[in-house]
Image (tube, rainbow, N blue to C red; front, top):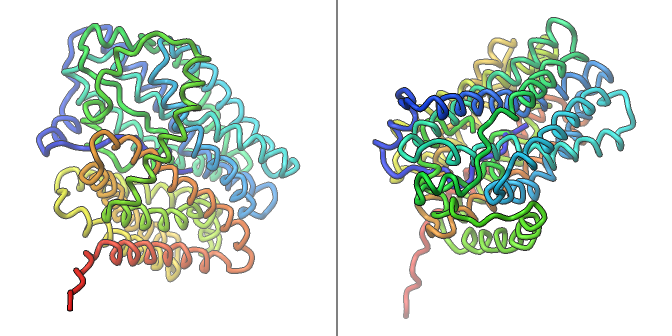
Length: 481
């Protein structure tokens, strides 16, 4: 599942990128070091689960029913609620004085629903499994909203390094999650693919209460100007989970500085008040973001291009498993194909953090979508699993810069006071498109087969690139006779 993305994650300068992405976390306060260690441990374990659940779900359904495409409907049910729950949870966590009361129960609900879904998938009525999957979609944003806790216990002058480590957490999870599911499936059988994923969620849940859940005003006491970052919950690249993390290495360094100033000074509110505020403000967040996205030529082009691309991307997990079987490999090889794509995406994002500049953002976006589509189209010709893995890695190499360019262009073009809205709304559109793509994959898999599916996904990348290119062309002024 695509990971959920980080709102307002952007870069101010090349030097800040280098400082945030690399270098050790130099801090001599044992409380900060201990708190960050617990934070990264809990967050990474939970994110490994979130990144691997889609792969585990497909492998589990394939092993129990022989029809992996059915997992696409479950993926849709997991993803679609994220469009609304992501902004609400991210907003609530930012405002809560005592976030432990909300974070731990929601993480418990997420872990429990994940375990229940993987136990039910392929062996229970589809309607019941869909309801459980929807619970995951309503609670999983808490996994990525943990990022907003960092400014509560990390000093302002260490936040850049902390965000660099946080970005690594997402990238590691994007690789380890599908790899764990595929590894267990190859050793014990596909029906057990979810055991390691659930175990990772449970371990993360056990570490979670050890985090330093300081209130917002404690952060303000150390540095009143150090803001909390907007949550990642609205944009995962599913994967979220990903839109959400895997392509942000070196780019999350300034996420805290880019968020709304003064968030640390928010007055104490109870959970009921925060929930009411989040509900009432959600319409304004989405509507305001849509207006900005529609008015700006570049933002309009980026939104249309990436939404079309993610309509195809939503079917990648199911298609990978079907393609593995198509080339004569076990279904678990589909998980390895996703790992290869995640590794390629990590390498691509690292290269982007070093060489990508705002001046080239449009060309990287369009060219990256073309390269991504071409690499996926090449998978259709792969004679073996090895060649398919190489093509998936190449696709990831292209996808990493696309996501980096998306974030950069949003930061460059959006008004500073609307950047959070733009990221939230743009991410919601991509997540919704991904959910629709997963459902379409499930519906069309039997009719078109794995080769037809991967070619359709590639075609949507080309369509996104073409749409972006057309919308980016400046309008010629009309000549007055």
